[in-house]
Length: 409
Image (tube, rainbow, N blue to C red; front, side):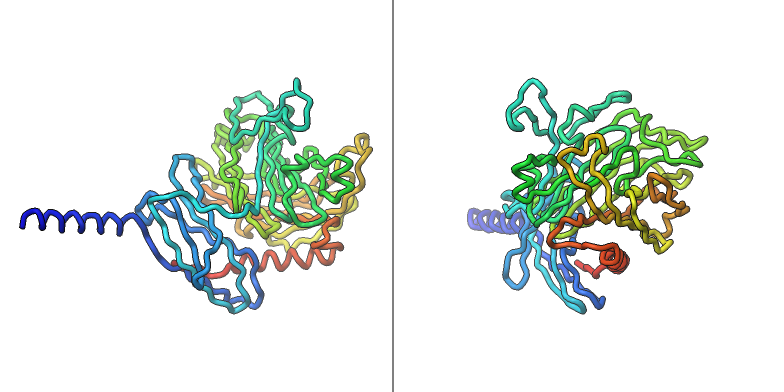
């Protein structure tokens, strides 16, 4: 009898362990708007579920949906689950999510790519000189710009590619494509003659010391300030896919040159999802930054025309060399459309265009700042080919950002 009771108790304990080893719940998505939505990101914070998630399964209508687990803070535990969905106007969808404490993340076809490489100038053989890395930290006064291939991390989906300069500029630069596909592993941001002839994309923007595409800088009261005075600077590839890349820039002890203000720590995350041309910019400070002012915007591409709704949306369409004119051999002039969308309550002032930029002064009443950046290349077979088309898209883009679908768990 005692043995039977012990066996029963053991079975109950095992059943309870199995029950706590997984969590299952539904995610409901409602699109109340009058437009279809493509590649809608669904992100789920895992901490509240109380288990150490090792794997996840997302399904809808009994069919498996590609998903991604991410360890965002580098502590060895997954913090977030994400997946993507297309949903028609006035549509409703339900997904089932199963979180498990056993196994490994499921494998799916990569739809994004990210890389950061250190170069070895002593070796001269078709990219074998490059060392792939995930993170690099430097002290004040150290500039690794020329030690890194394509000067910092680069990341892409099948439509667009971005890179972040690893120096005091921290500029966001862009790579435009002709056709959809992942290319950076092959071209390394710099296609050769054969790759160009085969229809691969290329660098399509000269950024210099401008804002490029939505780079955040300090504001000294009259002009932008680059991030020259930083105690420690780190660039890190947080996530490489399969559905999104996350690239992080950490500036510790940044002297923003705000008159009378002390140093501040800033962490900037650039998130690029599959199926979207825009990039999410999420900034976190180590303290309330309401007394600080910052600057951002987009480069004033040569001969560009501008659009602005005076409420945080600004864009341009123009044509220029993607490199300095003295280095233009082997290149052609590139036509691009650029866009930035900042929440209206973060816009302190929209400044008039100058020879370098279409600038904003921005601020926030908390320790966070969020905005989006986007671009297109006139080379695209799948994109936009006039200022009117691009500006119409930017209006639709802002409407989508300001009216997200409703997601409930």
